[in-house]
Length: 294
Length: 227
Image (cartoon, rainbow over the protein chains, first blue to last red):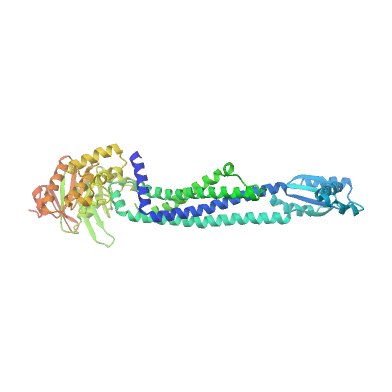
């Protein structure tokens, strides 16, 4: 392929983009909107998973024991807990320690314990797990152990987090599916119009001995340019919006572990651009295949 | 150069366009295809150009079987044949130069060579100085010259002209025939389908007359109506 051919493909593709300017803009707009929404969902998903990771490391299961256990029974339980699948750490908290912890956290409300004759708190274990998803299962298993009186974990938090994650994932996949298809459809329409408006030229090209690829490439390129422009716009908007949002969060909710801009998010922007290219290629391929019987 | 063996073409509506035609065309020949409308002249040129394939029979062009050609080979086959039409088929939004250069562009020729060859072709057809004009600014004869320049720019082995003077006045037609004669003189084989009996009679070239899809007459230096 000579230099003149490459120049020709680009010239034709861009001429056609400008000739059908409204349709081109609409296609770019749909790609931009689809990928913007997709980018937002992606960032929400990434941040949710970062938050979940942080919570996971903080989330523990408290196992409260019966009062009448002797030391060897406690040791036995400790061993059993350690070898439960999914458990990453076990810490024994004697009742004295528990009371002290409570007094510390109560601070100046300590006088309420003055009326107590004895320590009302039980011995307990603090258990850390590998994954937040395993917590309910592990808690249920521990509950069956002999000598265990009660098992407490941030049940609701865990369950809500899991629901939210699932919901985000489903919404994200559905929306990108629907919007992606809409974008592909609109690009294929643009290319179809473009093929139609140039059918005379295509006929001439064929009798001048142009290969099928020579006829097709400008149209494919046109679709790819549409997809890529949309993706580029979407990336820029996502970037700007996200910068504003994390600045706001840093001020209002500094405890939220948001993912910073540059460090981990480059793949998101690359992903959007590549997705835009693919959407463009898919849209134009449909029309080139169906309407360009060369 | 071109050999047709027992070529029959039946269209989908069962009309027989060509009926068992056998024809040999030698390199450098100038052939007139004559006959009434619907005699099969255009079908014959379409089959040679591989716009369509015959129902029966074989066609060999420059040593290659045109009928059995793979789709990928067709563009390269067509680059060896220049086409000139009655309705010119020029791109209205492009300049004269661009129309001619387009034939080289589609074959992937380098820009440098395109410029050299396109200007040469325009000189051959006598359109020097009109490179930057658009087709609608030219007369019918000049438009046909652009079309001829485009057909000869990549130096084809064969030039097929289908009613090239159909839309032109007698004077312009004669000028164009001189141009075709000159191109033929450079070694390009020419097949011309025409109704212009005066031109055929004055040129004294080989005449192949078709009627109802059959070759009814084939004469060296013949006349339109036959002896």
